[in-house]
Image (tube, rainbow, N blue to C red; front, side, top):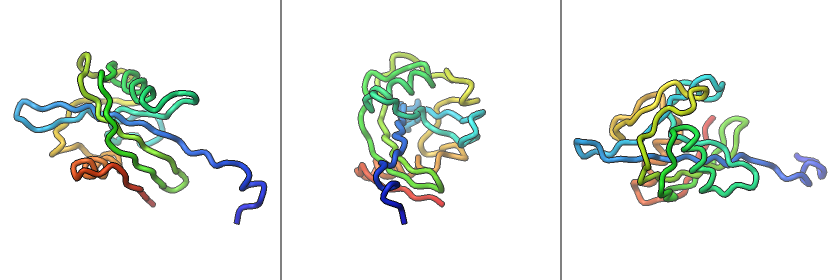
Length: 154
């Protein structure tokens, strides 16, 4: 049970933004651009869309554009909200905001080699492993017309 002093301090949780850069492949299927995390000590080896933490004073859409530009060299001209995924996992808790990034001003690339060691387009029907644990949930939620799901991992 929390003490009165502990309850008087607001808990703080990270707000994380992710951008699903999408395109239609030559064969007609949908592809998304993923990075493979490396050298960060958090989720290294996992394939993730570009994203990161909201900075103080920054709007969520601004953070999504900034993170995408920092990690892929491009900021989509159009960001569309897809879903919100509050999460709890071990000692981690926070909020994921997922956006679709369309109308790219150029070809994305691995622009932040200190945080990832590979990047590329992948068919949604055959995503690489290991994959960020929330990404399949987000894709399935959006495909079904949903926008919100709470995620809990051990």
